[in-house]
Image (cartoon, rainbow, N blue to C red; front, side, top):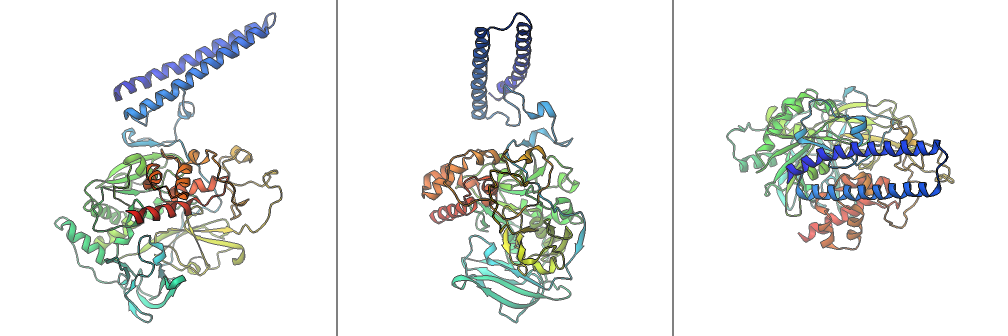
Length: 553
């Protein structure tokens, strides 16, 4: 069946050529009649009717061909279409040398181009930070009040446990630096929000026993990772929880690039840390019964550290955001259901795991991108997990602090933090935005100010490379949750997100599962939330649905 559809793909090329030839003949005939004694109205009507019939037949055949190709399991990377795609006319941006066998070309998505991208300059802030914090609120699936193992005034080493989840005491959450515990901050209902450590001028590390990866069994390896604080780096899907060491993942997925606005370059992250990255992949390969899948950017020149990475199966993705999301990559490589368990990590998480073996210590160093048009300088800094924002941006903000918003992460999925707040556990980007505390009269009637949007009401679509200065103004309040088809334009997954959101709002568990809840987390619908005409908080709705479903499992 697959081979037959490959033959059909060649046949479709012939059909495209025939279509162009017929259109040329029609145009020549119409021109000849027009240049003669004139074109009668009946003749024009016949031509219009014939064109409508031909187009209707072609579009119907197009739909049938694509449906049959999808149902038969034909190669999705080929263009089973009667019509040429954009690559037939303009060529591809895919870099030479990308294997077509593991290439995924995504046609849906949208890139939000903003001012303030980080320049390729790396500054060392590891000795300039004063306080660091680990926040239990960064971890889904653990108790809001974990068991704290330290008290204010205690001295800790980098890698010493600060707290653990009462439901899973073996998974330790460790200090990224050595120093004195100066605060255990609490929020609503006495839930712990931060454990703050005042760092020593010179970081001292907890000693780690050497492990021979070639001879250690999986159970001993899991115990080693839990005791030394790196297990919380691994997330579990469905539900985006801290991984459970009692579960064996079907596969492990690592996305090596990020397509979110102003996201850091993998080149800067991997610089000088290739050995630890490869060792981390080797460790992960021993934790799964399946494969370690690497998602690689097909439209940029990736480092040899990624292209030649061992202990992994590589997949190349070409497309706009969210092509770099690991959830999108899972969907196109090996989709998951509620009964599956897979683990996901980022590049820096893999490096931290590998450093435990190559350096013999819990090395929580992070390369963080300082991004946003309101910073005087945009660059990269090397610091530790949970760094204090005020240490990273000191004297670097061009506006008054009251007029800007600081985000730990990117503008689509990040969390707002105070100027003296702390970097999120998994975040490798700080973004600053102007506060959108203003009213714009007739803003949608007089779209004069350029702003990022997928709507062609605004002239931005005529300037695809224009970089916008974004703010936090939503340009409207929440409205009726109407069907617009906008979500499907930007989500390159075979999912109907609007139907899923309405199933969550109505607590319809069967429809939630049937509509693909297991495949999504907040970052996957962040772009849908950005384009939403109804101004719905889709990430919040999705999290509520994930939590509800998790409670039923």
